[in-house]
Length: 506
Image 1 (tube, rainbow, N blue to C red):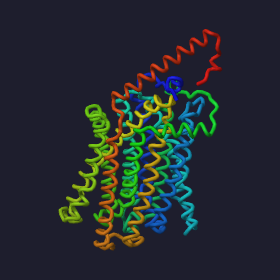
Image 2 (image 1 turned 60 degrees about the vertical axis):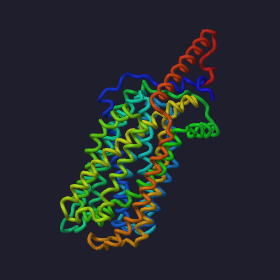
Image 3 (image 1 turned 45 degrees about the horizontal axis):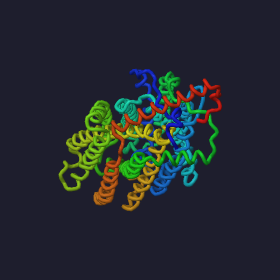
Image 4 (image 1 turned 90 degrees about the vertical axis):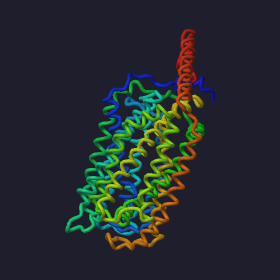
């Protein structure tokens, strides 16, 4: 398809410059995504379902993988739907408002299963609520992400806007982790291992649901004044066959395929690591819930630093090279403490130096990883105009949905692998701290380390083939502006000649 013949649908929007209040409002919605990310991570939910609800580890891994697979199948449909949706509230905001209510209700009931349920009935209940929570997240996150390329067409400003999103994302995850581990799961006389306190998780769900709902609504209201300046898709009759052709054309973008391949390997690695974190913290490092509650929110420090580091580095080095360097450093740092302990170079468990080392490492890992994630989201935004030049359509929703599809799907595979590793070493159910043999934990770590390192390494290497730099992005923007100008001139000529705009083919 010739992009010039369809340029009105692809021309980048030009609205007023973004103010600080709009950036903050846009970023605030990611508080909800951070809450969901932490609560649904393997380190929390997989441990909860296996050790607290007492579902078998392999069934838990299977359920998590199934919910992520369903979510991954729905994401492209949400993206395509929001790209072509028309309403008084624009393309994106109706989905975001609906998501706020669905997220709050489904998140609450996920952690409030009826006491009478057990066995397969309990598993079915958990799976249904987990799918509902994940779908609500997609209904919000995909349209919200899709706003970024239109709110910030500039190559570098996109990285700034992405920084706001990731800052609030980490704040949401960090605050909820502090509350869960230091308040709701605090170790006391009634709960010698606070992580097994089922009532604590239920109280945590109330706070999580309220935070998610409030954050989404604030973001919707705070960005609603930009709707008039955003792209409105043309009215057209679209058949199912046309829809699938457009999806195939969009997903065939070479730079998008590179990002998807990276997400495939990285998603499996992240899902496997997340599913094992609480096992490592509790039985390998012998940390108390309060100590875990200190380590996890240290990522908040990294998120603050990342807001400044990511834009500066991407301007100086380019997005691709900066992201590769950041993810490489993050991987090495994240594996260093556990590797050093295996070879006897870490202080013994119980030493105050263990928390100091793990804490400093957590800050470094968070800074490097979050900076990398900020930039990679900005890279996806740059694919929007590259795709528009090639296809003549703005497809932000479909692009961001697809970028998030493989990581979700592969995170499910990672969660399944984590469950498989736990089963492979015959990890005991409802295990109290200090009762798990050291040899068993060492076996689990030795199974985990090489697989994780290889998967993350592959996710970094494939990014070498990403092709959109600042010059390419500027050329894409210029082509779209020229195409839009030609289309406007043609429309003016048709109007002067008496041809109704309603008869013009878009």
